[in-house]
Length: 251
Length: 214
Image (cartoon, rainbow over the protein chains, first blue to last red):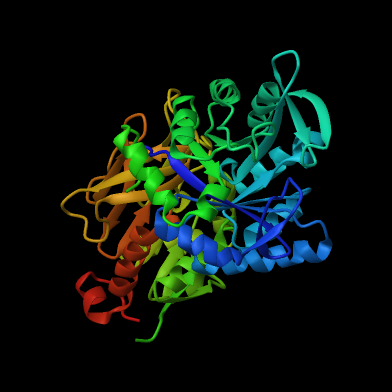
């Protein structure tokens, strides 16, 4: 039986892990490869690396970062951030990514999801969806780090992306991200029920209880950054907690 | 100890970098196959596989590599096949109904049932039968939408469960074919790769299995 997955996320800018990406006050946390190796030894099931570089120099550095992480990492690596074409995806894969996350560019042109899935396989095509609650009680896709509202229904977009070939959905609550108030469980439930592929819950987690709640709401994997960065051994503690609660984790 | 030379078949696989890095960590010195002769003569060969069944077979057949891989497997020479690599060994796949597999193992590849998450993406428990000498119990990382349900005759096999039992790996002599990804299966996968590499590239061990020495 498949176990649930615990995914530490590295926000990387110009080759360094940073914190506070979506907010003011970026802080340099350290080298991505060191974080990745530490998380693997703590029991992480995969690593997600999001490149938030704003410049071309930063994007070139990201490829070196992926190579360095790959050299030390024996678990899957998903890389996202600024993927606009099949060539972008290919470069990330050749550098050592196992899966590629597409976000804004896929919203603009869903054919990109189809092209990546056809070329590299559905298991390689992760669609990253940033969703914000609407006044009407639904969820709307936002892009470009939340600066653009698309008017697109997040659940409908998840379904469309999977029809176009996405093999996994990385679902981030824009409202909860960075708030430490827990994942948006209504959002997780709605998307997990709408698609057959695995859904990764993201945005808002600050403890293992939040992760348990997201898994019970239908998520197949849970992603977090800060709580893992700040506390050594946290991945293992989360897994112990989930195991005590009857959730199957990889030992 | 010098590194074990191992030839990797370029199947157009998406995560070739991970496969090469995994082999290096396990003590291997991987290089890419340049043609059928390379695959035929190498002491140890790895066939990675991520992608489409039909496209992979077409590519392997047009380059002449398909026959070389099939010969290695049938004659028991040290060969490690990963994910799609395992599926290609069978006779057919529901993924591409009109295409013949390599036919080295009499199995058919089928899509997972409709009531489970597909693709299967994540870690699943692997249980080897008593005849397995490479695969040990543990958790392996899978990324697949299709699988083999019945273990083939004449092979040791390991199974996992995803909406029912399926074949996680088969082995015979120095041939090991895995549905999961050893290169992404953490320390467990690294140990498995190392065991296979050592058996494949150590003359005494390989000779007892009918394989060739390095």
